[in-house]
Image 1 (cartoon, rainbow, N blue to C red):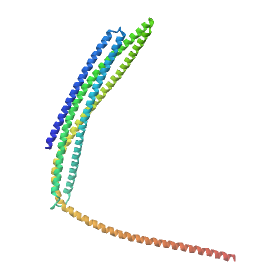
Image 2: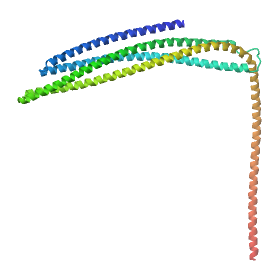
Image 3: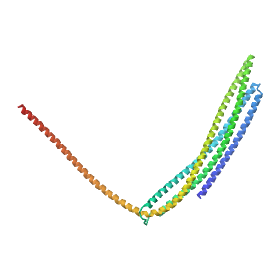
Image 4: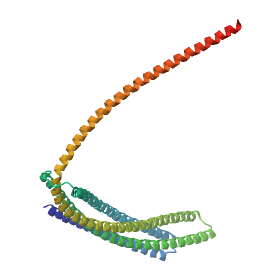
Length: 395
């Protein structure tokens, strides 16, 4: 039943991934429409540029055509950047969702692998205990531990190990599906990068043509200024020329802004290429981790089969060690009682030693006092003798 539910869950996730792919295809269709609109705008800009080339003699018409050309290029750049940002936002959100999903699966797999490693370590400890029991010279005897509890714990461990292996298998399948979807998205991103690069080249060519037109307009304006200078410039013509120069400066500033936008677009293309490389490296690392996890699952399955047989043998071996364990416990109790008796004896001997040490200290203090008294008496006698000898000499 659990296996069937997991399969249904995997099928449901596959359907969700297919629906997400359909939504992405519709988004790409919208992007194609935006590209067609940008191409139409580019054709209109080209037509305006050609008409402006045909009317070079009329200065105002050429300036208006240049303004139309600048506005068309600006709209083209803005539409392209908006479409690219829309696609990047959608791709980023879906990529982050898939990355979170894959990382969740990887974390679950790591938890299951840690659990399997822990079971393997427990199996190794059981093997060590079994080896130590088998090498012990104690004879087998009747009785033993609770067989039902030991058998139930071993069965539960085996069931948990089988469940972990099944869970890891389904996680590996989900990771394979996520890897395929990443590869498809990487191919689509490469196609989009090629298109953006071509668009950038076309915009660069259009900017070059716009610069040539600006240079031509500058030459025309300079020529007109010289001619009008020679024919005694009038104030109205001078004001018109100044306004035309201001428009030309505005057009140059607009062209510089467009150049900065194109450089920004190139940097975005480079970032997308770097992201594509990082996705390729992540796909490769996920493939390696997938292979390693499959190998570990196979090893864990074989270890679980070996542990079943060893647990059965260990249960039979443990039953014949209970009597020796009781005997050792009795010895331990007797040894603890002997240690308590020895501690009491040591405590009494220590108290006697303390009392004897105190009496010796008192005797030492009394002897020191007697020595001090005898020294005082001796000094007094010497003093009196010295005085008596001094009195006899004086008489």
